[in-house]
Structures are given as structure tokens and as C-alpha cells.
Length: 90
Image (cartoon, rainbow, N blue to C red; front, top):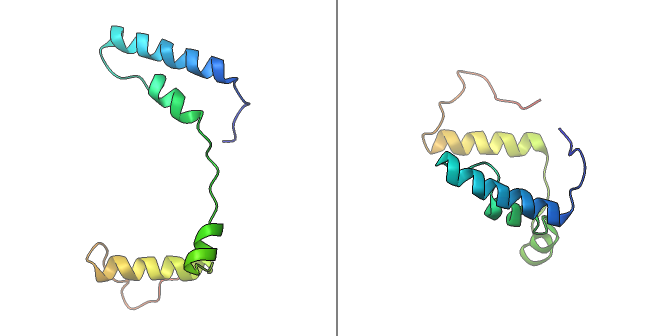
């Protein structure tokens, strides 16, 4: 579900403080507290540009990635091999 909108930072911090207060009364940590609010205000922009530039990272198809990941899981005992058929992601 896409975000409903953007909350002003002051409102996010205030909601975090109210979460802290509610947590003291409920005696359990709430979903939103001041730490979660502060974390949500940090920049969350990610890019693989540096990995491409410095490490030679290259994109590959989804199908190849899923197939290799499944093979790794089988090789390391986290999954059982497919019975007599090739596993293909769709």
C-alpha cells in the first residue's frame, strides 16, 4: 500500500513521544516510539551505483537470481531439490 501522505517532522516526533508515554502505561513497547520516529526521519535513499562502480556489480535477470538462490539453499541444506524437474521462476 502506498503512503497516504507525508507527515511534518514535528508531528512524527510528537507521535513518537506519545508512543513513549503510552508504552509506560501499557508496560510494553508500542509500535511507534521516539526511537522509531527518529529513525523514520533519516534519509532512506539507496542505490547500487557505488557497487557497480567500485565492485563491478552487474544486474542480472530475476529468473537467474531466483534459480541461483534456490540452488544455494539446496546446496546448504535449507531446501530440498525439486523432484525431477527444473525450478523456473515466472
